[in-house]
Structures are given as structure tokens and as C-alpha cells.
Image 1 (cartoon, helix red, strand yellow):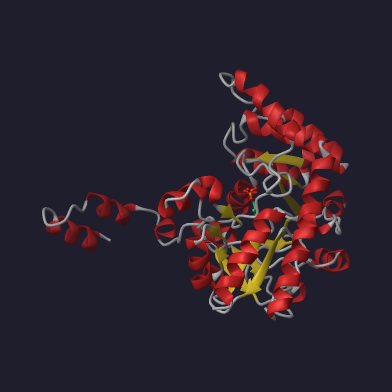
Image 2 (cartoon, rainbow, N blue to C red):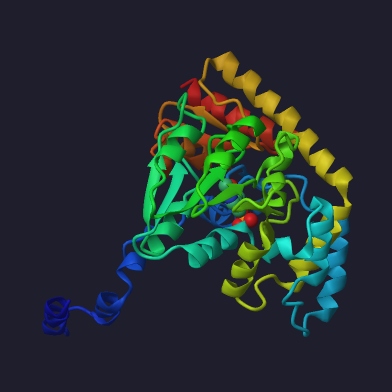
Length: 384
Ligand SMILES: *Cc1c(COP(=O)(O)O)cnc(C)c1O
């Protein structure tokens, strides 16, 4: 490093090197990261195309096109008048409610600023240089980001039948250095799922020194087909990750939670910042939990939309992955090109090149108007 700094000092005056020189002092794990790339925002797209935001269809981030529950909106509006007061740092009401909802005790819960924060907190709690993290191919890109940020080794295991977590192979990859295994169920960006039986078989054989993080961001769309909270009740080193961002339609509020053992919940609560979940998120999430009808309507919208896309893909003979989520992965030949062409028409989808899936795009299932528009634009692009 000193050599590099010297070179920069010599160049001073030729180039403004202040912000470059500081990089040589930075944590190299951070410096070498590629930042997480979210779906392209509506406002940005509207600006670039000279369109109104209302004319943009965003099907890129697996948001809920029905919006939040009206009860959540009302609760958050009422909460606005109390914004001069810090939120409850312990999220007491929300944690109590989540405990009751899942039939666990308060000590089994942790509430977080979106389950993205939970992934990071798991890293802080369990990873240090030399530790190993196991996940499946095409996993959520935040897992490798957090692993590398903390200097851990990230091990990606090829799927079985291309798209489904190979739990046996993940188990075989465990070493004494393994600290975390991420299972996404259903998976993102693929939409596939493993069964309860497969999970049980897997969890029963994971050694004591490994934490199994089961990320269930999309579980509501799978009809709660699995019960991973059961592993927590059995005292396994399992963390169930849940979020209010997808089916609950509260992505902007930033709220997620963990159901885990009291020991792990305690670590997560120690590692988080004091007021990580803001007051809007706490009351919004609480109210959203009361509105089961809204969840049912959201799931219904997604089920109908999924069928709409499947019919369309089959009519064009496109390869797609059967989905248990509110998005669908489809092979369009050149993902980035189709993404760009659709974007020019005001439809935002997600190219999959970052996952090495260059031929694919991921489309969030929206309402029927949005799906119709997306299918119309795709038809035009693909038939040329
Ligand atoms: C969307 C998503 C999350 C979390 O989202 P938050 O908004 O941070 O709660 C976590 N895991 C997966 C796999 C996701 O797709």
C-alpha cells in the first residue's frame, strides 16, 4: 500500500486524487464489492423517457401492485403526528404480535429494517474472515455481498434440475468453517421451491456449528406450503426470515423479522442499531397483520396473473420456470436486449445478467392492466 500512496502523491496536481487516495485506506473487502443493483426506479425511468410516472409499468422488484393494506395506510397516517418521538427500539407491540402469530415466545423474535438488514445482521453475528457461507446458484445477490463484506468465503452450490436447491450437495459442502447456509424458499429470482419433507431431512442433518437461514420472502404466495418455524420450536439453529415488503405491500416502509432461537435472536438484537425499525413501519406492519383479506386478495391477483403469463409464454413457445412466487423467470433469448427495448416503452422488468442468466428476464406479476401492457410490449419485441 505505501507504494501506491506514494504514486498518488506524485500525481497530485495532475488529477484530483483526494478521493482516490482514501480508497487505499479502505477495507478492501468493501472496495472490491459490486454494489447491489435494485430494479430501475419509476421516477428515474419517467425522467429519462420524458414520460409521466403514471405511464410507467414497473414489474422489476416483486412489489405488490395492490399497494399496502388500507388499514396499514390509515395506521401510518395517524402515526405521522407522533414523529417527534423516537420509535420503540424494542418493537414491543410488533414482536409480541408476531410471536402470537407464529406460536412462539417474544424471545424467539427480532424485528428488522427489511429482511435485507436481517441478512446483514446474520453476517455480523456469525461471520469473520475465514468463515464460510453456503448458498445455492442464482441466490439473492445480497448473500454474497454480505459474506464478502465480512471477509467470509461464499460457496455457491449448483442446483438439481437446474433450478431447485440441491440440499444434499449443500450439506456435503459443510466444513468446520461453515457458519451460515442460506436456503431461499421459494427462491428468488427463480421461483422454485423445496418441500417440507426435503427441508426436514436437511435440517436434521446440519451440524450444530452451522446456522440455517431460511429466507421466506415469498412464502405467502406458496400457500404456506412449508412450516419452517417448526424447526425453531424444536430448538434447531434455524432462522426464518420474513418480510412485509412483498405480499404485504410495504416495501417502502422497510420491515422484516426473524423467528429463531432466543440465543440467536439475542445476538441479532445486540448487533442491530438501536432504532432500526421506524415508527411508521412498526404500526404499518401491525395493522397489515390484521388484514388477512388483503393478503388473500394479493395472492389471488398473483395466481391469476401467473396463469396469464404462463399462457402467453406457452403460446410463443418460451421456456419459463414454474413459479411459487409473485414473479416469473422466462427465457427471452437476450435478456438485456429485451429489458432495454421494453424499458424504452415504459415497462420495467429485471434483466438477469447479474445472476449469469443472460437469456432470461424476471417479470414481477402485477395487476391485470400491468400484465396486459407487459405482454403487449413483449409480443411486439419478440415477434420482430
Ligand atoms: C425481497 C427479498 C428480501 C427482502 O426484502 P426486504 O425488503 O429487505 O425485506 C429478502 N430475500 C429475498 C430472497 C428477497 O427477494
